[in-house]
Length: 503
Image 1 (cartoon, one colour):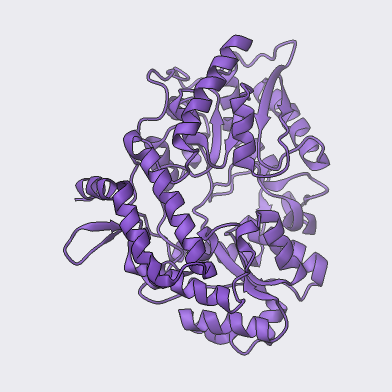
Image 2 (image 1 turned 120 degrees about the horizontal axis):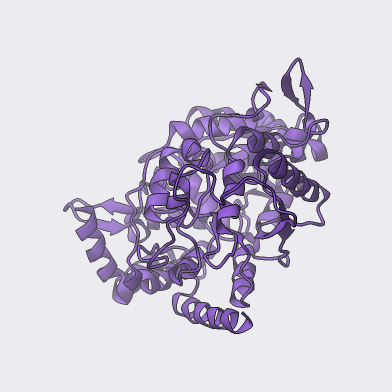
């Protein structure tokens, strides 16, 4: 077994070196050549529901989940008990710990070392692993599932068909900007921003946040441009990955005139101290800390429950008046939080193709999609996160401030106990509503394997030029040099392929 693991590790390592662990390209060749058939009928995967004498150990790795956290320790103890009671599954969860830091990188180091848990949460870096046949094709399991098939949304169905190794059943949740409510109410530019969220009005709002002394800078983001792009891409005309030109052909949005104009605006924000000048070194936790402490006036967070957690923490530190105001996407050429990519899930759960307990692992995932599993995963613990009053679950303040579903969040709430009221607070609910208002599908596509390395190189080229232009190390006019380098280093071939697909 050690030798087998070493061979796997070596193979994966070589592939990762070749592909540079890119997250931008999408391969349509990934996965086992002969995926297992999965459950053969509508009977629960794994056979008899009679519990075994000894529990089956299921090893799992999930971002930010640690056995040292009492809440998660209790969660998985409770899940073990409920699986035994409701499904006859006698399992024991072993949480694999990762060091602090970049989750995707640390996870790849774990897998490179030959340690491949049964259930793996990916947040990037999954494609090289899938390309080696190390991730299970989930489609046969889903087809014969008891609950999962019924809770998948349209975008989930499209993504699993395109890339059958990751499952992430959540509503479409773009990143949405928020600001402290007490600060917003004291600023003269706030109402104008809500009524007419032009780029100029966003600039004025950031300017007043800083000039008033409330914040050190108008906005901060975690490490790259992805979060701030949710606000401004469409306003500058970046409405999809591939933009149609006047001659009817398509060009990648990253080499468009719209992208150049957007980067020029970001450079202005950076130059005037309205964009955090240390944004490139920010991680998600330091970004959030800057928001709570008042250094950043605006941050961008995932629509839904995440923003409820932000609001709960903000009130805890700064008082009930410091709730959150959800801000709209900037308006210009278009308006929205960006088109939604349906080529694959960008994050989600995968089952190891080497696991000896694949059917059991999937039964766990399926149970969590059913009423009893959803009651635990969505509501938390009775007496702490909710109380049962007149036969209904009444959510507590602790629910809104600390509880977050670890697995599935379908739009329809189907728990074994009816819920009194909404599972989301005002910020979370409003952010989902505004996200749905601006939803549209992207025209992106799965990049063939032969172009993945090219895409990774082009993505890195873009990041280098974008960072230099924003920080002022390069003039904005150097964008033309970037475009020339893009096409010279494989961008032309990629564009030719895109035009053959999109036509």
